Image (tube, rainbow, N blue to C red; front, side, top):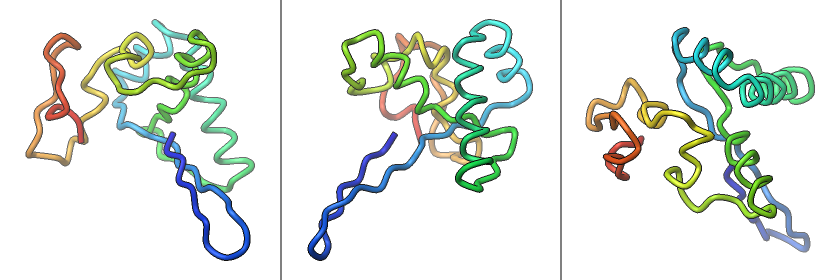
Length: 119
């Protein structure tokens, strides 16, 4: 999740943005079957965004801010500093390259992942 502090005018406030990834049917099925707790949190966040915020996400978009929350819950509320740290929650690094980004190649595994493997 992106947290953006704004201090215009007499009041300070923050904007927040959820991170999303593109997930094809195979990946969605893998998450739903292999990581049901994570998938349920992704689906709950999707429902919140649709029902409360009025944002309809395409089924190919998965909200990954939940992965950061899962990691933080296991680490005394601290948010992860990068994707590799929460690799167990994200499952595969392919999530981090947009299919339309032809300048970057997805990493096959976390051992070979670098910032060049994310959009």
